[in-house]
Image 1: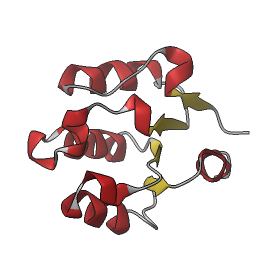
Image 2 (image 1 turned 30 degrees about the vertical axis):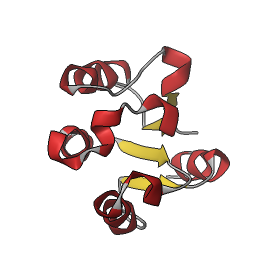
Image 3 (image 1 turned 90 degrees about the vertical axis):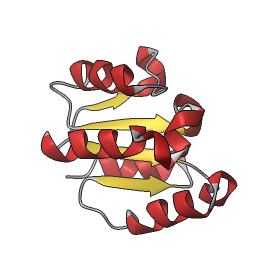
Amino acid sequence: MPSVIVAADHNLRVDSMPDIQTLLETAYDADGVLLLEGDLGGAFFDLHSGIAGELFQKCTNYRLRLALVVPDPAAHGERFTELAREHAQHKLIRFFALESDALQWLETL
């Protein structure tokens, strides 16, 4: 069974660029990471900050599966909604409305 890191269980948040490195260090031997909406700071949802893009690029580079639970992407703007839609079937990074669906995806390789 794949090893999954639940961010909240490790007091992980993504509020800034340094948080991405901390998350990657914690998930070093893991197969996937689950981030809930509450684990993501406001800057993550502001695509101009570059935090979401940097996180996605690092996860892609390290082939780390990332599941993000954001029940209503539209609450974070049109561009964020587009980003979530673009990642609906991505190989490594996906958005989900429900935590159970995200965990199920992470636990199946």
